[in-house]
Length: 89
Image (cartoon, helix red, strand yellow):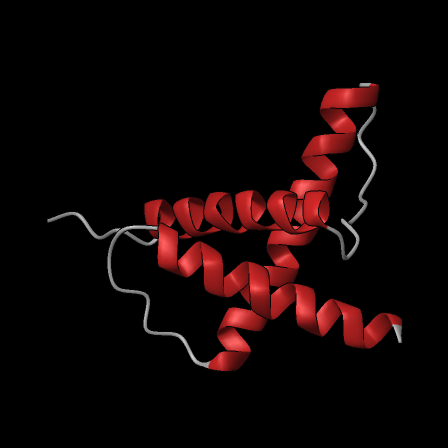
């Protein structure tokens, strides 16, 4: 059941982050899922770092707060990805 929760959280968080982030992100459903899971890990890790002061690689759970953190982490992941892959002439 935990695996199914990760898939649902990844799809929801990735889809919301892609809708909020400006620009055209033409990813497949698998890309959206991966974006959401990366966002969940990034959001959970940043939350743990800010609240406890220790760096622990954790992920968020399937709750309202977890989805919010996963969406924020996915937006941050999109920002980092597009900043790193931007081409300059």
